[in-house]
Length: 305
View 1: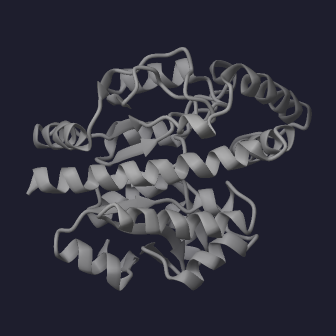
View 2: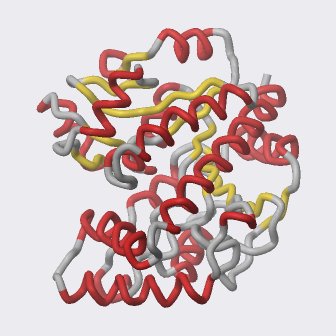
């Protein structure tokens, strides 16, 4: 395993000295946002984590290695290279063996974080059960990873293009706690509300850190969803964004777009239909998640020592 992992000096030093570290994904850079907003966001989010007392570890695959932390030039490569592959659990061996460049999804980033000994991960939104998933069986591998991989995922809920009810049912069945961070309602990515509740509400990083420490010390394997709503000033109205998503879904179906191409298509279409407002919201929620994740990583690190 160790032969496949490489670290930046900053991340290696943090892990060797038991400092709080927050994992970050690269799919959001390569497939989730356009250039140059993607590279600006990536650098800013890393700095936000540092400013909140933790060390950022942006994860990606390059030259047969799982990179735990990226240099500035490597971040730029993920932001600009159009041939970057999207990597989930099934894709790891192929991308590593072929030496291709791969951006890690939520599932893949969780796997890499656990291999590296990182317990907290900040992202935008998790994947889940797609709408009409009961017909298509289109269910994100993120959910299976959350069921078995010991990494807490700080997110703005699940992407609102998904079937949120079925996504939450899947998480419940697999024993994944869904924690509302300062909220009683499960956020829906672009909006603060969804109509669905959370399992537990916690209001401080220390409370979340204690929950994580307790869960894993009990030997209860699997992740935790820490649902952190987008700040009110940046949120979109739930009903309006729902109408936009429905239009985007109809276009995806008309164009026979399926599989891993669905989410990037829908996010891009939503951006077009909201005149760019959804991209601003996406960046805002990632920033917010990074800050909260760093605070939780610090609290968990203090508790687990």
